[in-house]
Image (cartoon, rainbow, N blue to C red; front, top):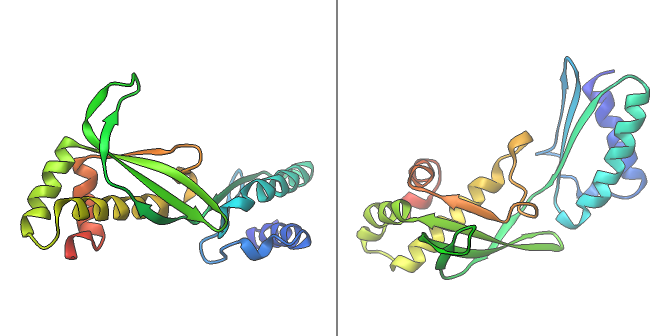
Length: 190
């Protein structure tokens, strides 16, 4: 069996129940490895994840009976709807941390979720040095834009290390992540 054949089996299974149209065919991938196949299905509507995962479990079971292993990942394309003003960040124990917590809302089709990005003090200082000191925008607007770009970067990563904002609603932006973001996004060009 080839990855093209596995893709066709998955496509047919999803098309039968009317779910193939929610699949982002440009970001989804079907790969062949020595121990089986990897399928990453990226959906344009996060509210359909459970339905597609159910179909994928059925396909996975059918292929296993034929002696073929399939390792599927079903994830969604997310967009940042808004980033709110910061509040003090809280640690696991509930105490206040030396960071700002930026609440944000993400949307994927009909599904929304709230997340939080904790920006540590080192990142705040770096943002002030690199961007706020330019004086074009007020500090709050700059910080929110950096958080938005950071979220977009995190959401753009796929494969087995993708970020699922439903399961993990917190992200940490530290100085190293900000400096990487500065060189790999438009945040430093505005």
